Length: 145
Image (cartoon, rainbow, N blue to C red; front, top):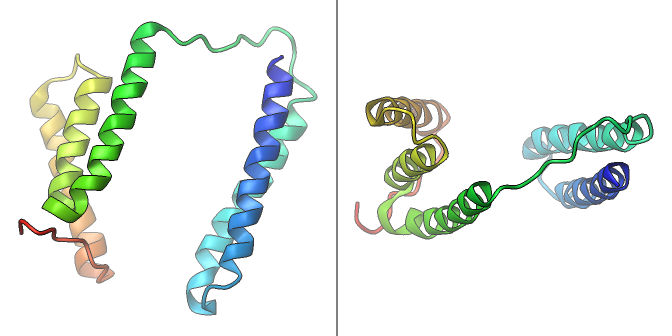
């Protein structure tokens, strides 16, 4: 059963990457290189997953989803949706900080909140320096900023 699932997933990924690659062909040459590279890597990895599915032994265990993990998955999906909605309202950096803190806390409630805040602050500063200052990428400021 696991082998069939891997094969279906690999074919689906390959089709997704191939479709995205076809779309990337219409990009300007200056900006098409990196997406094409990533999509080629994705296609190679999906072919590797497909090939690997023929050599998997029956000793591989299926992943079981507990009720706790399923609830965390649903909460994460709601958080991602709220995050995307919040970006134009409160801005990229603020919404990313809030999303990161909340998501890290939900996924690992044993961590100290001070550690979670520190990680989120460091990542936000790095994002701002790399993308906002060095690469001059526009980071949405939102209506509240």
